[in-house]
Length: 121
Image (cartoon, rainbow, N blue to C red; front, top):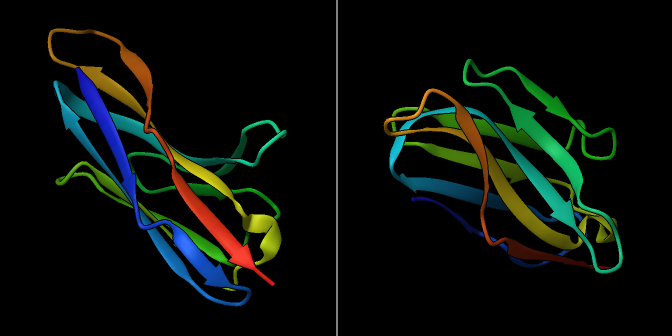
């Protein structure tokens, strides 16, 4: 089994910063693309930032210039540095990864349980 665990969420005032982390564990041979997604109550889950195994990143327009995604392939971890936070960033943030499992030829998509980020005015 594969587990993804997020951490680092919390309450912060507008203009502040938070750093989210995601740790992958279990029957993992390799992590391919990874990403951060977020979902506010009553809204669809949306992509925040994605990153390839080689480190190429793409960001949602709403966070570009404020958020930075990174990963450590040796540690099977990923992070999201969030600066200049706005109230509209309030959501549950989820870690996602395409995982090559032991004895498998293909990648499967896995999700963490999420971490709450709340930005106050």
